[in-house]
Image (cartoon, rainbow, N blue to C red; front, side, top):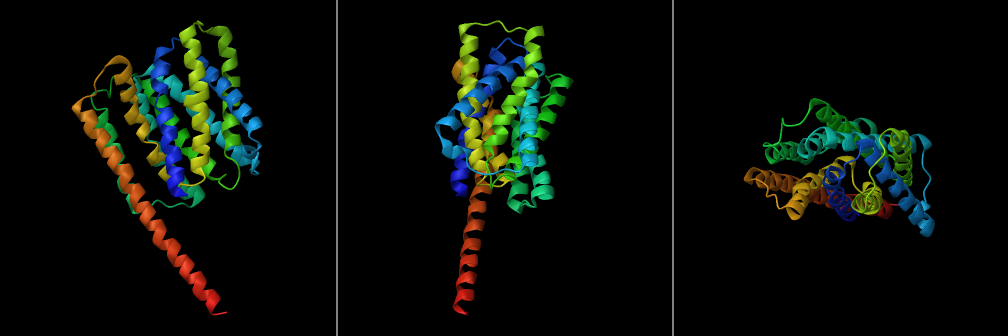
Length: 298
């Protein structure tokens, strides 16, 4: 089950990684972009839930559901705004302080204490991200960088909130988050009306249905099966893939330092994942053996 959960988070991060490119291409106010994308995503998620009733199973704690919705809405709004106020590299790097927040909050709230391999992976990931984006750091604006840091906090907090709903249905939080984001953006439409065009409409539809809509299902599925810190570490593939899409679309080649940083991050995620699986397997066997021995003594 952890392997399936990690695969879902990985695919989710692949879809998330296309957001920076589309946000930069859209010449709209950032809140309008976030709200329009969320409106499409909410309709998409609602439609899928109506078509597949099994996805509505599971009872949630109302407080956990609202906390998950609010933290994710805040994550989306602050990240899109950060992308418009600073460089994409800065926004992604600073948002991906999320694993640190997930580790701290997960230990305090969920009592899911990170193992030593997670701490090593965190250090490796942060070092890899700095190396990856070292040529881009410092080129953004202070407001955008601060918003990206805030987005990272909310992103880490959000993963913990969804993890609290692992026995319920985390998809409720994601649906409500998009409703909140779309509602928050509604007044901005009157003050910053978007310039509608076929490419812009296509970009919003893609982001709403695939980039954030389908990704929401994958994240909700995966977070029920892996810890909050492991989910954030696996999602680290997102900032690595962002320049890949830029390369494919614009032909811009990443620097050698970026390739080296990406290699370190991939190695860190693989390192923590492999050790995590090995740790889970013996413990499962020990629990099974202890239970069998106890039953045999009755």
